[in-house]
Image (tube, rainbow, N blue to C red; front, side, top):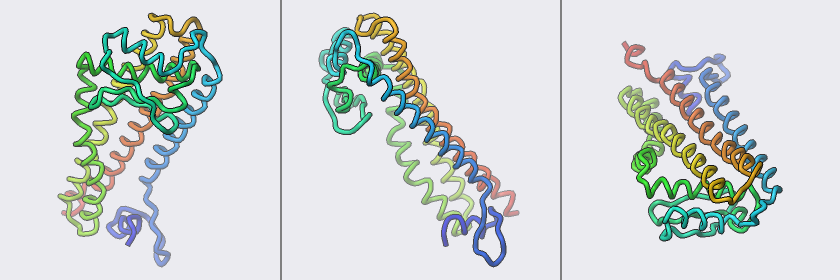
Length: 249
């Protein structure tokens, strides 16, 4: 029995007798979340591509930018590395490394410089014990566990008709929502630090700073979209299963 037919079987869907199909109206939450996520992903890809064609006057590469920013903040111990992939840039607080994708590491474009500066913003956050970053780091293992176990537990509760399992699954999924929400101030703060430092250090000048800000704002939208999609999914779960105690009476 599939998930969708199981929901219909337990009274959460609408269907037509004899056809074996049940329509779950709360799927609109999933669809809306998917559309938002695809829009945000397309937006960051197009914005990055646009400003990847805009060379910086400083002619500094993403790697050189990262090194310059880190040294200016006294973070000489943080290493700058090249990693494979496209837009796979990230800061690893465990190894104290700024990892730049191949499209950023050696590029002198405004877009690449902006992305490199953003990852350095995370390194500065780490060095200054920025509270939201510390909270997010602490939530990573908990959120991963919640993400992996929430759906299996919900399905077990659904198939066996065990309400406590459904509620436990919702609680575990809520950890993913909490992680997404705490990620927002972390990312926006890193971008704010990045734009400020790019201007202060003269790495970007004039309208280049505004262009880098547009790239980082587009990237931040992906986190907003992820948070929105996760919240919509949580609302869907609450609508479907949150009131099972009342329904079972």
